[in-house]
Length: 139
Figure: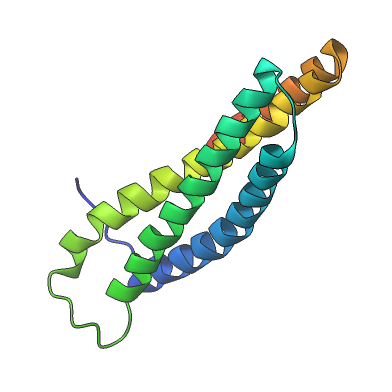
């Protein structure tokens, strides 16, 4: 994998922002998951929401560690050698986990309306699909 020659400062800022966003959204995902765990609901859609909330929470935790590794590698006076080669794995894992978390959380939001009615389910699904498309188009 070839890493483009972007300034180190860019990667530092990117990793810092990804850690902040992942911590925030991971906390939200974990809170939603705990709420699901204590709720007694046997609907199939509810089980899928619970599954995707768990995927989102775990994905954001992994993203935090991946992006923190990037911050450590790029820190001033870092003891690591061959930093460019060592950035590949945390970038790939952190980036994929970040987007997996975002999309899993959007799936939870998309499915949420189906717990109430078909009409609301269609609306929330449309909103979720739009959000997923916009998320991918902005990156």
